[in-house]
Amino acid sequence: MVLISAARDYITRMLQDISGMKVLILDSQTVSVVSVVFSQSDLLQKEVFLVEMVDSTSKESMSHLKAVYFLRPTSENIQHLRRQLPRPRFGEYHLFFSNILKDTQIHILADSDEQEVVKQVQEFYADFVAVDPYYFSLNTPLNHVYMLPAVVDPSSLQNYCDRVVDGIAAIFLALKRRPVIRYQRTSDIAKRIAQESAKLMYQQESGLFDFRRSGISPLLLVVDRRDDPVTPLLNQWTYQAMVHELIGIEDNKVDLRNIGKISKDQQEVVLSSEQDAFFKANMYENFGDLGMNIKRMVDEFQQVAKSNQNIQTIEDMAKFVDNYPEYRKMQGNVSKHVTMVTEMSKLVEERKLMLVSQTEQELACNGGQVAAFEAVVNLLNDESISDIDRLRLVMLYALRYEKESPVQLMQLFNKLASRSAKYKSGLVQFLLKQAGVDKRTGDLYGNRDLLNIARNMARGLKGIENVYTQHQPLLFQTMESITKGRLRDVDYPLIGNHFQQGRPQDVVIFIVGGTTYEEARAVALQNASNSGTRFILGGSVVLNSKRFLKDLEEAQRIVRFSTNAV
Image (cartoon, rainbow, N blue to C red):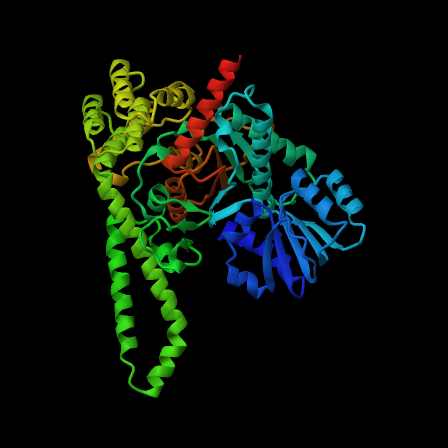
């Protein structure tokens, strides 16, 4: 519950201490922060009758309403307030910021409040989107920036780092702890974010982070997405990850408007483990088990529907009316999950994803270069395989065998270029430049480290329960190394002279460049194993393969443009 309840508590405290009718004013980032933890009915209960964006151009005076602003402390937001406060539309202004305000910003606000309508200015550190209890995202704009060399666009890179440092700071302020900080040695941006976080927590705002708590400090580990480029390229076969891969989830909402004929109330549905018991029980289940569980849910609903048809007495009628809201909710939930699973089954069939995924998993988990090459060539030649699936297969092959088989890799590049006009093979080469074997720290394929080789052999001998879910993200190994005290200082150096005394009980792993739902599942399973260490996973965005490739294309475009400009 940790992150969701932290964000909920902040927003509850903001709203409940101000009596009367309110308008809640948000910006493009805080709207996501609020929407994942508060439903519209929750807001109504707190007497919020209107939600507006801070850049709204409305001039209508509503002096009977009290305005509760919840904004990031950006210069744009301060400018909006600077314009709005001298001509107040609302009776009272209560200003809450999701992170640390600068002194200059406070002075600007004070100077702008000519009518003395501002009743309070506070910092409430909900500067992260709490996707699940142990999983957060920052929904960072321009996420591709992390792949660019620092000289290409220094100001965008600085904005990106500032946003990430703010988000990490807010997490630790919400948890009321100050961490020991480590980072991935091979990543410049991970190092920069780790250094800037340490500077903020131990120098610039050391008083704010001094919680005077004894015991072992938590660990913040900053790593780079490019250390494991395989996970965001794979098709997914567990419920939450699969919905994001095939349909798309944004701030726990799924847009179903493009799927055939759907009733109005089902066009955008909420998929939250907090609000949906069926989803909570099945979010990490594989597709096969999910199908059986959905059938069971439909059967149960049919039983309830049958009993509702059997109304014979006044008492039966009264009972039906009492239970009707619950019945409607159950009906909506059943139809939501059935719609999504039906759509995903259709896509799996159309794109031959079972066939594609089998080869993907082989490329990610097992050796055997000759068989892998043959399998990829066959799929590239198959007319029914989509362009994006062809590209991902070539990328997965290239990441695995870039050193072993350069000749065959060139053959695949040429084949891809001739089969998929949409994708140029240059994108695969750009991925290798960004995330090839020479750039990575971790033992991605379990073939560098004797311990990992032995572990992989043991897994192979034991057999795999499900060929489609045999891949484990690199994050799994990282968590295992932390719980066993084996995370090497050479690969993951510490910042400053703050050493870890003993094994940390709380660990926040932040992946610069974004995380996946597969990794969030690995964290949830690790936390359920009661190893004595509690993990929280965060990232700049929540990725699926489409988003990862889009970031890659955008970074490649900018690098090319800047090279040509020189």
